[in-house]
Image (cartoon, rainbow, N blue to C red; front, side, top):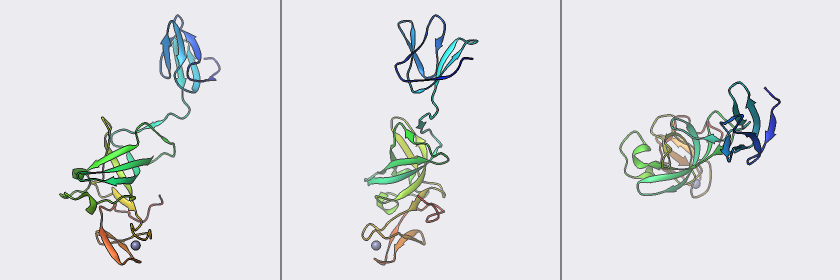
Length: 186
Ligand SMILES: [Zn+2]
């Protein structure tokens, strides 16, 4: 194994006569080029050229637990921006705009999205689909709203029964809460 050198997308790293293009590379006109930033690995035993990214982008997949901010409430769904994946501090690559269908918000039947989620709510959710778009679910106990500010006065909302209470406005609003609402720093 040769010394690993850093290469950039488009750098010529090998020739097809000697190596096969693998992860992080592509072949064109007999030459092999890097398709991503990373360390070049020329494996002489298997005759494979690879470019290994030190920080591969976090592409979300089904089953991943994510943190998101509710962006909009529509008739049959909520939209949310995924900001992090649980268990990693690395940034997210790929799609982060997600939808949560009304049937995937709460374990019980609901036909009113605004009774479960509100714009600006911080939520924990699970990825249930990635194609053709990112889809989330907050059905389980551990999923749902983990932090929220009052839509009127921006005060931190407190858990009260099955909803959230604003001490300043003395108002309770319903929500699909995660079982640890208020205990999560986000
Ligand atoms: Zn308030």
